[in-house]
Structure formats: structure tokens, C-alpha cells
Length: 386
Image 1 (cartoon, rainbow, N blue to C red):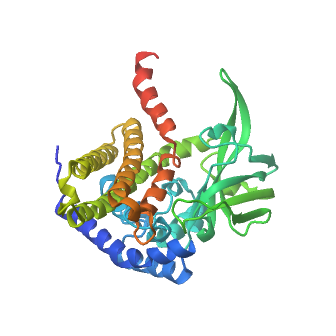
Image 2 (image 1 turned 30 degrees about the vertical axis):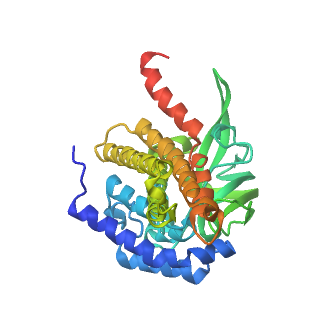
Image 3 (image 1 turned 90 degrees about the vertical axis):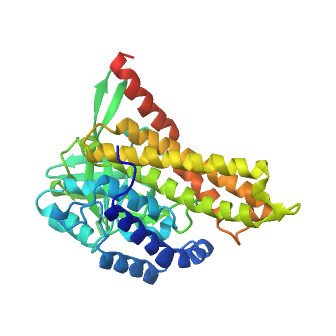
């Protein structure tokens, strides 16, 4: 197994890291203070990303993307994780699920998204349907050649910038041995569609400026042409294209943990108490050793899962393990770094308290830690008949 990065991969890491440090870091304090990304800043980041050739790096070259491998793109996400999510959002990673577009959908949604002309947002979660996706109440009723949608979605990230939405909606029910389960269909919904409203959601302590929104559907009529994939087969589309998003979360957690660790390491070497650097005390030095060990372990878990995807090997369990471990590792590292800084760690003069707050959501979105443990245990037990 090759543990080192190729020359090309080293260049990817260096380029994206430099981009984040030069184009993202300088604006983080303002975004933290205002909870908002000024439009001109977001557009400038997008333009520079397009100029670099990294926009839609997660899409193949045949549709206009950069054509990076899963491993390469994971390295990109790891470096982007070092910066504010509200700002790196404009680096441009459209949802891979758009590869399911066919016919006219490709000209209307896929290609403009890859070119950076239109931005998308994914909508799945509802107030009563989080981990239990099949319990969603937002429903699309068939009406001739159209569907009429009623209901709502919440916790929708990036909605304020989206020109269209990829929405998962119930379209029927089946009787199963475990009770009634909803059939799900995926729709492409333009922002200007009558009967569709996008409104600001809740205030979150994590990732200020990376807002969540609520989507309301009130007799929203959509033609059959807006179905992504096949009717009642939204889970097929989801399972084929969305599992890798959890790998992106894991990679971002590793990048953010390394940035936080760098602050803690420098502080432990520079801060003096009782006549010596505090890092010389085991109460500080040992936690630093634990932190870097956990960061490295999460990094290798994440990269090995990406390698499996590139090798076309089953990777559901490995992706779940990476997301689970990296997100929980980030919580421990940010908390440990804050402890090393002491009282100053809680002050907003430093970004440590921000890293600490931001870390909390990683164990929830894109599948909670409990869901990841369920995926892992099911993968191990099912072959044994359990």
C-alpha cells in the first residue's frame, strides 16, 4: 500500500491550502461577527475557484468537471475543512447526485451547476423525519402528468444561494414486515416555482454564516420532467450518489482538527508557566500526543475509504467508520485545545471557541454518530445471519 501522496496530489493540497489561507481566512472574523457572507466576497471566491480550475472538482471531465479521483477530492475537502464553511461553500462542489440528470435536465441543471452558473441545495430533512427518512410527511400527489407537492423541509444548508433544489419527497406507501414505509421520489425544483417558498430557518451555534433554511410547499405543481431518476425510486438515486458526502464530512473534520491542533501546539511551546513552556508539563504534553495520534488515525481512515471507492470496492462500512471517528475525534481535539488555552480559549479573540462550537454539528448532520454505528454493525452482522 502506498502511504505517500503523489507529486500531483501534493500540488492539489498545496494549491487548495494556499487558496483557503489567502481567500478564506481573511474574511472569517467578519462572517463570525455578522453571521453573513457579503455577496461580493462569495462571488469573488467562486470566480477565483473557477479560474484555478477547481470548481466542480468532484465531477468527471466529460461533463465539464475537474475529474478528480475520490482520493484527490477527499484531499481537497480536507484542506477546505480548515476554513469557514460559510466561505468555502463558494469553492463550488455541486451535489454529485446531479449526475443522475438525463436529457434536458442535463442542460438545465447539471451543466450550469458544473460551470458555476447555477447553485444547488439538497433538501431531505423534515421536522419529523431526520434519521428516519422514510417517515417524511412532505408528499407529492400525482395529478395527471404533474405532481402536486405539499409539506416542508428544514435544516437546508446553502438555500440562500441556491437557484434550484434537489428535494426528496414521499410519493406513496408500501406495507412491509416492519410496518408502512414511504416510497420516495427525487425532484428538481427551481427557486421561482409557484407554491414554493424559501425562508430563513433557525439560528445555530455551529458554522455562523452557513445558514439553514426552511422550504415550504403549498400546492406546488411540478411536471414529470422535474423527477430526478425514476418515480418512487429516490432511494436508488440517493444510495448511488450520496454516500460519498459523508466522506467529505470526515475529511473536513480532519482538516479543521489539524488547524486547531496547530494553534494548540504553538501555544504549548510559547506559553510559559513556572519558568518553562507549558508543553513540558505532562498535563499538556500528553494531551498533545493524544490529539495528533487521533488526527492521524482519522486521516488514514478517511483516505483509505476514498481509496476503496477509487478501487471500486465496497466502502459503506469504511465511510461510516471514517465519518464516525473523524467527527468524534474533532470534538475531542477542539475541547482539548480549548483546555490548553485555558480561559483565553473561550474568548472570541481567538478562533478556538469557534472550532469548538463548529465541531458539535459534525456528529449530527449527514447521518448521526448513532446512524454510522448502525451502518457499521449491520454491515458486520448481516453476513453472519444476525
